Length: 211
Picture 1 (cartoon, rainbow, N blue to C red):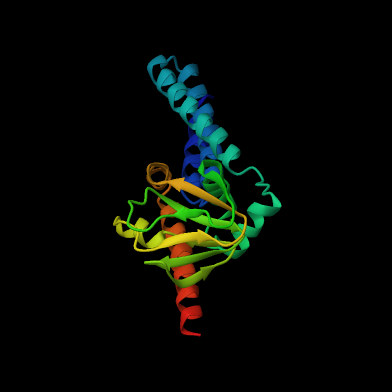
Picture 2 (cartoon, one colour):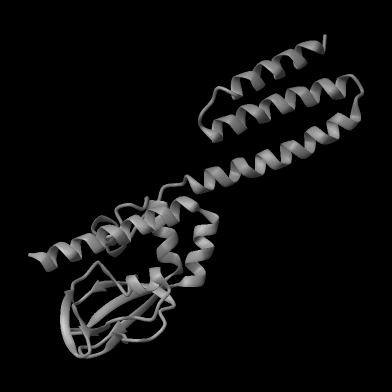
């Protein structure tokens, strides 16, 4: 009589192999494990029951994690503006993860946001306000809100080749290199999306210079 548990469990396992969504794959697998565990218990095979229990705990944990990660993401107006203007290549969850780790900084007109010829330990985004990019005291570019700065030295791991000086009250964000490396290690797609955002911003800057 208990053999139906074994057969249904294996049919569910076969079905799970055709499911593309990892959440549903785990849900179907958990149901199959419960049936298979029932079969083992009914046939007094207690060692497999213990293994099935361990597998169940792991899968249920990951199901909870997937549900948590898929919860709706609510961005503030400022975060939404950054996403739409300079972080388009990141999805909402990646934007939220980035925002959660960066440091907010404020500066008055004339403040040096990034000095020339110094090591750069983080990635910076001008959130509001304007700033000049200077080399040897000579202005070479102008930054507006929702633009990266210091990204070249950050990517090349060299000292900065230009200074960034605020021309009005500004607010900008800094995310340290160590934190970025940790985020990238956890989510390789995040690193790819962020590099694409930086590349897009660089292209826009170069086009403005040519115009």
